[in-house]
Amino acid sequence: MTNNKLYKLFSILFFLTILLGCGNSDTSQVIDKALEAEHRTPSYVERDKYRHPKETLLFFGLNPEQSVVEITPGYGWYTEILAPLMRNKGQYSYASLELHEKINPYFVKLERAFKEKMEKNPDIYGQLRWVHFDPKQPEFSPNSPVDMVLTFRNVHNWAKAGSAEAMFAGFAKALKSGGVLGVVEHRAKAGTPLDKQIESGYMTEEYVIQIATDAGFKLDAKSEINANPKDTADHPKGVWNLLPSLRGVKDDDKADIISIGESDRMTLRFIKE
Image 1 (tube, rainbow, N blue to C red):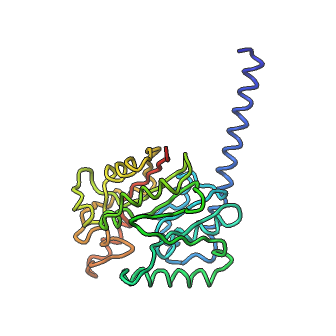
Image 2: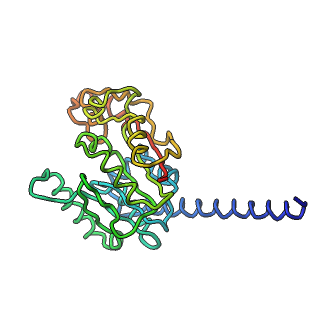
């Protein structure tokens, strides 16, 4: 290869590096704006120091022009960040359980509460798509495949319900080829039996990686963004002893438990093959 061709090649690589860096910088700035917005629930903002939303979303490779489905967002901790972030150029979908007569009343309460949040902030949630799914045969994006599926601290619930395999198969079906599945989950010690994982709410990385692999995903990267070395993951009431639940914790013990923070968590990025 001649010096002239080498120069052109290096020039192209240089400018591509600049462009990619700018894109990441732009996304970082947009995330900052969403994190600082007035619509966010004050108690949710307090959890940023434990959940590292900016670093987590950047690790997953999210940008505001993508189509993103968040699975069972609950009261919308991440929705408060993702909905305004994706509003103008992308598409955010809130995927929750189909409601029926036999469903746990908690999920009815949850849906009502989030609808009230939407009604109070139509400028934030006006473009949000709401998807209801059956966990046994989930359809998360029935009309067209999406760029990214995200789920935060949910795998233990599906393992307990016996729907984890179906859910991960649904993620694969919803994603474009090369699409990203981002998973954050409470982390059990390696080798913990499955029944103990379900009981405690802490899942092993091996379990999550295997179930994703079985569904057609390839593990692309791990991150320790949401690691917490203070968490021993062996509490009497499982992960629910810790913040934000503090379930079953005696008043005399709360200071010590609060000092731990939230759970130790794995942060995994998968690619649909």
